[in-house]
Each structure stands twice: as C-alpha cells, then as structure tokens.
Length: 356
Image (cartoon, rainbow, N blue to C red; front, side):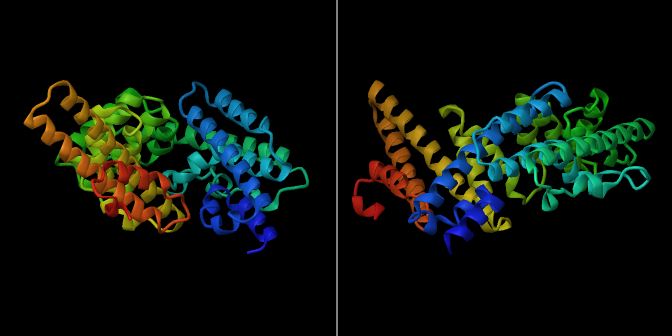
C-alpha cells in the first residue's frame, strides 16, 4: 500500500484502520505520525462522548462536546472528519442506532432517513462548519422524534398484558425514562413469566437508560442481572462489563476473569477489527486480573506463611502464567508488541521455555 492510500484509509477509517495498516506504519514515519495524531484525537472524542452521557442538559452537553473537538490541534481534513463524528454522532447517531426500529409506524411526520443518514459523503468546501450545521439540524430532528415517542408513550402506558415498548427506546437512549416506566420494565425483567425476548429487550433498555443517565452503580447492577439471569449468546455486554470491572481493584479480579472468559467463549460473533481489538483487550485484562490475585496471594504468604497461603500463591502464579501465555500467543497473530505479555509470562514461569 502506498503512502497516499494509507493516509486516505486513515482519514476515512480512523482507529478502525490503524491495526490493519500497521505493517506500512512501521516503515513510514509520515504515516505513523498521522496515525499517532488520530489516536490522540480519538481519545479526545472518547472523552467528549463519555462526558456527554453524564452531563445534565442535552444542548449544553452537545455544544460542549463539539467545542472540545473544534479546539483540538488537528489538520483541517482530520478535524472535519472528527467534528462530524462528534457532532452528528452526538445529535443523530445515538437516536439513529435504534430509530429505524424504535419509532412506531404511526409517526407519520418523522423522517427516519433524515435522522439516520449522515451527510458526510457530500460535505461542502468548509466541512468543519457544514458538519456542525448538519449536526444541529439532525439534533432537532432527533429531539422531535424523541418528543413524539414520549407523547406516544404517555398515550400507550405500559401494561403487563403485552405492552409496546417501542416508543420508550429512544427515550432510554437519553437516560430519560420516567420512574414509573423504569419500575414497570424492572418488574418485567424480574417476572419469569415474561416472554424471553421481552425480558431481554426490557433489560437492555434499562441498562442503556442507566448508562446515559450516568448511574454507574445501577448500570453495574443491571448488567450483572442481565448476564446472570437472561439467556444470551451476545459477547458485547460481557466484554463491556469485564472491561469496566478491570478498572477496579483486586476485589473484583475474579469477576473480571469470569466475564472475560464468557466474552471469549462467544467471540465468534465478532469479525474483522472488532474481533482483533476486543479479543486482545480481553486477554490483556484477564491476565492483568490474574496478576493482581497472584500479587495478593504473595502478600498474604509474606504476612502469614503457611502451607495454605503458599499453595494459594503457587496456584495464582500458575494461572497468571497460563493467561499471560494465551495473551502472548494471540498477540503474536497481530501487529501488536508482544513484549508486555511475554514479560508477564516470564515473571510467572519457572521455566523460561514456557514463554517461548
């Protein structure tokens, strides 16, 4: 691949393309510099999006997120690309993700296509400004759709004999479900007589609502309930839960390992770059959790030496080595640096050959 083709792929695909282009990036200083800048600006976008879901006031959060991106020190082509992602993504994509299947067909005056289809393919000469203006219009259409959904939700109140949950989906995306709707959905999930598809849908709606409202503790509770009580072969929720728990301490390390294993068991559902990135992350956080448990076992052995604590430390060390070796083996199938998983494997191995 030429430098020109690589730069075009980076600007169009962003972070999704970086891993696939790694062989070229390793030999081209100019393209590597552009990839590094994309990584930096992707982090800026990520922080803006994370904050968006937790701030009060749709308008204020939207404008602040867009301003964060516009202030970024990026070349015009790169800035216009990410401005579109941040602006149109915040205003339209959040609703567009479900609007095509969430808004009832009775809503005659809401154009699903207007909300769901970005105008990025036909940006005028001033793409940064045009993207933000288009996002403003998309935001207004999205709000109109949500207002209509709320009106219909009021007219068709939930009932246990087979309610239509559709109008509440876009409302949940904004973390704005009414308390009575949350209570009804929760009762649906708890009632084993509820059809499985309805339980799953209600549970996911509550999870989305809690996340959008910034209710972290409630989000954890709802995700754990979903994963432990509902039949589900989708790896996404287990992956997100394991990743969330991995940022905590050793107290939840066993849970990180448990849900990482669940997601890895279901990883065949993923493809392409999503598969590579998420499987790598799962191997990484699982090995890290095992290392935390090993260190805790060694500390316990140092404080109160005994056959039991010595055995616990040995078992934890062997598990750390095994997980690190699996992480290492997978890393060697990717362009990623294998030095970290190899170092962890060697630190836990009694024979260096185990990590070759």
